[in-house]
Image (cartoon, rainbow, N blue to C red; front, top):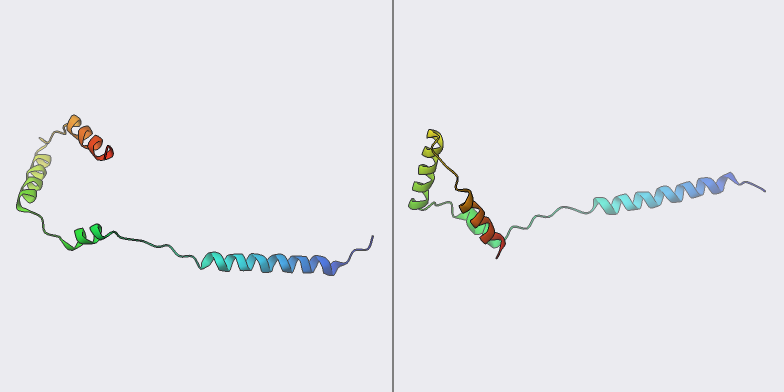
Length: 85
């Protein structure tokens, strides 16, 4: 059996070329982020209603004083309503 060392070199070169092509095609891909129109609208409106701001301040005060209590049933109900849609 005759062994031709040039065949193994050529096979190696072909393998390298195919791997280089694969890497070039993979690097051309880019991540994309799409922001919904609702999210864009929310970002634009930074105004907080007076009632909402009052409630936020009330909860902050309760947390600072250590008197804020979480109603677990109400939280579970809200989760259920959200996921049941």
